[in-house]
Length: 181
Image: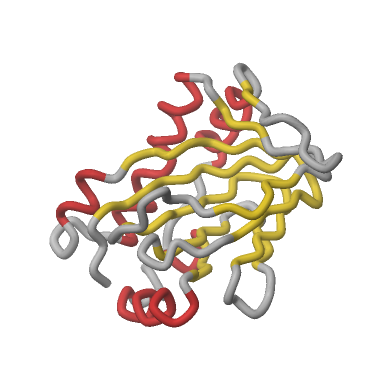
């Protein structure tokens, strides 16, 4: 059973543009077998941006198999956060943005997730490793570990960066439309 109140998430997103929770707090079971399938298939096809300022970058997973498994992993998280009876469009129309793969020392430089900010929520689920997520306007960095679930308010579209402390670190990113917390 979830110990996270959806209204609390909404208030938090309006105030700081991000909210951090976990599988445990959401009352969800972390599916280790499915997570391992995502992790194992994540290295099948990686696209890595060019090195900038000498920094090792994150890699984007291109494997269709990995994306299919990642979507299956993310589905119960989205359904928990956005119950279909209350948020039918969100639960039905969410999309997998991608799967990110980080090696120790890799960074995802400061960026915004959306080109056109809208009423959406970005959901980031961490499968393994340790990353710091720094969100502009949020007082302290968020430690991303296995089972972390982070929400970013797409309307605010906050600038953020990630850096991997202990890799590999694999995260699944989804865009959930038309959220009205």
